[in-house]
Image 1 (cartoon, rainbow, N blue to C red):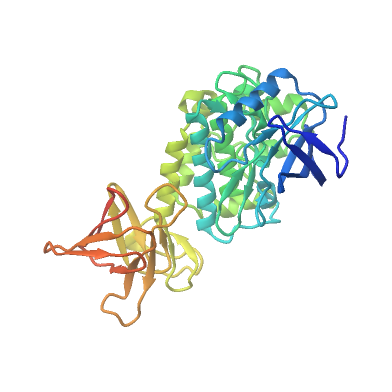
Image 2 (spheres, rainbow, N blue to C red):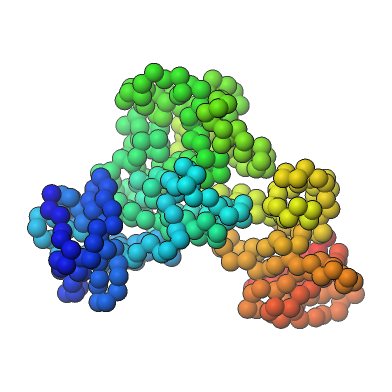
Length: 421
């Protein structure tokens, strides 16, 4: 194992140098150093051992292609082979981003449900872009994400095992996150096994509990390799499986999921019940695509409002009988915006996301005493065009607002049109 010293420089394949400032951390494959490249502070992952020629060439190819999306802390520079090994350089994690594992340990917390939903959307968007690029991640787990607690922005890290679909990097994945067919040795990691791991990560994000870890796993006297293959490979059972209650969450142990299971809409619960059903656990072709997950997450967003009584966020599944899950009091939805088959619930302080990105387009505002006390503020850089039931047209410039009034139609971003119903 060749460690680098502070002040030491390593050569990059583009002819420049990376000067070591200090060690940032270390893991199973290597050490991450703070380095300077051309006056810019970056991170160098330096492998303990030479990972081989194929691994080096794959890194070189990924650097040449560039990141699938801005969600990835992608390798940017490759070192030359030196001291019997090599490494790659990537951007540093920005300030105020925390490892996903910190959220699972309650050492970091999302500021809001909105931020949590944003994180889920960004993770799905990243892996959709990755798979559309013809790549698979192969080692998806809770250590691959840095998340901002206030915005829900996500950076996907540890991208050095990413390889073309159908090609294996030699890494099977992390225990508890590998698809059952990888655990049992029936297949190597691919985009389908990525999608299983994605479902596990999303379940952990929303419920802070592993989807396969309930009473059955808790009763295991010692987690041997045999038990691990059984619980996560040959005989996995979802903790809320419709047909098998053997592995239900245990009060006092699995409190997170017990507390959160009914806090989120039935839409999300039903999706996970399907995704971790025996059929989907054992048939990789039945698993949800990233785009399908995004549709689910978008519907969650549309149901999320701010209670006008206690000012806390709450999900509303029935707009005709809205009740806050925080204060328990009923309240009236200010209006509903229909966009195609979407129905977006409106209350003051809600942000509306027209697309599947994490950039809000509308801020619902309250103007007490106005003829229309609830209005939609245009927080984009584009003009909207509002049409009244009588056919009158009015432009709504950025930072201006339109009333929440039944019958109004509005042309929003691009060709997207909405109607207040």
